[in-house]
Image (cartoon, rainbow, N blue to C red; front, side, top):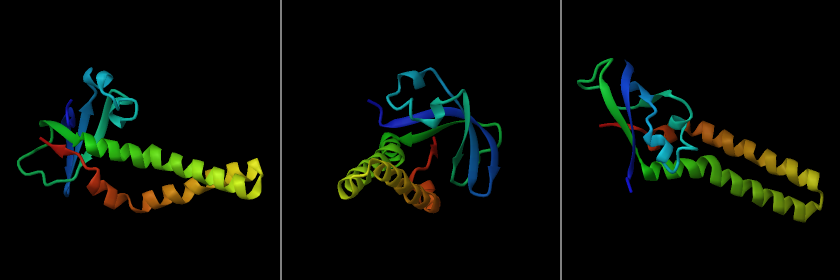
Length: 135
C-alpha cells in the first residue's frame, strides 16, 4: 500500500512562496480508497497550491504533487469525523437534558458553527500542516 497520494500536473503560475499547479485526475483515482473524499477526485482538473520556493521551476513545467496518506487521513478526520462526533454528542446531551428533540437537533447543528469557524480562523496553520509537496 502506498504511503503517498500523488497527482501529476502542470505549473499554472508562481506567486511569492506559492506555486499553483493544475493537477489532472488520472484513472488511478478510481482505485484510491479516499477518492470519494479527495477534492482531486471530484473533477477532471483542480488547482492546488504548493507553499514552497519555486527554485528552478517555471510556469508550464510538468511536476508531481504529493501528500502523505497520513495527512489525507487527518484531513478527513477534521472535515468529517470530528464534526460528526460533536454533532452526536451535543444531540444526545441536549436531548437528555431537555427531552425536546427539536431543541436537541437545532443545538447539535448550531454546535457545528463554532467548530467550522475555528477551523476557518486556523486555516493558515492548517495550510502549513496539510500541505502538498512537489517531487
